[in-house]
Image (cartoon, rainbow, N blue to C red; front, side, top):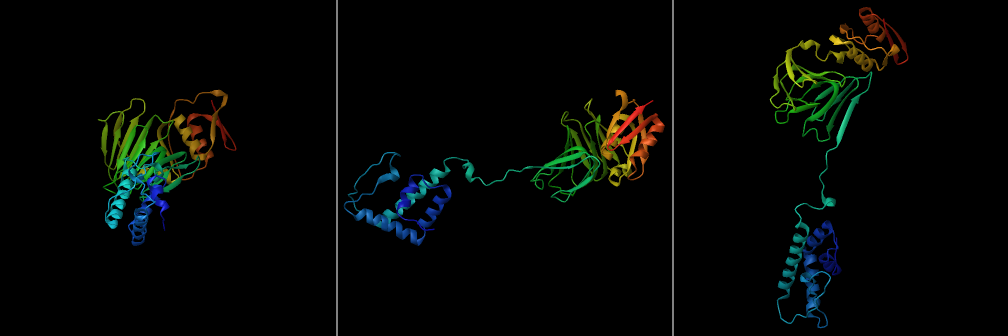
Length: 325
């Protein structure tokens, strides 16, 4: 890029942006720039009717015109003025510790949301290579810089296969519960309608803690599970059957001593239906236990439940109506 004498004053008056001013100074330090600048000094210095305007040191808005009456080596003058221009640049553009917004090039991370709708399950491979298996009506949220900060939020249920990285722990946030892992596989069930969050560990090690109580922290081994009661806000540990953890990924429905209302919510998510109770009746406070083969038909599940709890049912498209006797 080439400049001429008009750019000297343009620079000093602050009419150049940061990028243009940097290029101007870079050009001044080149052989062509030095030659041009020295010629400008000679022309203005030696011409009787001309003056060197002392804008470089004047107050903005007021121009002082003064003739120079002493003699100096012109090359030294040119070098001194060039140094002064550089000093102006450094002062002007570095007087604030934070550069203007238009020159900031850092990119702020953005939120990424992955979800599985009712009746569907999906697998998400994260940028670090870890895999997340999302159960129906579940969602994870994380930032675009996940590879640097391996933290995500979970709503619903998911099974995690975490790539080992000792320098960057993998953290899952669910309500007030934080589950941290290095390289491991585990399942978290945190659906909104449930009265507790439950975490089951298959392999590796995890640390589970509550934001409500900093002393409430558990180090978990394979074959152990951690529950968190949403009402009493307490963590507890119990032994689990590792083979049952995450078997929903294979299409298997299994529940043990689960309240009937939670079972109905499970079926709504699993089969993408809406279940209504006839005549506005309340759901009986029954506990249910059952296991169904992979991808079992909804009618077969309802038939089995109806024998245990005694209700009639009808299905119209995606609407299921129950009539308790």
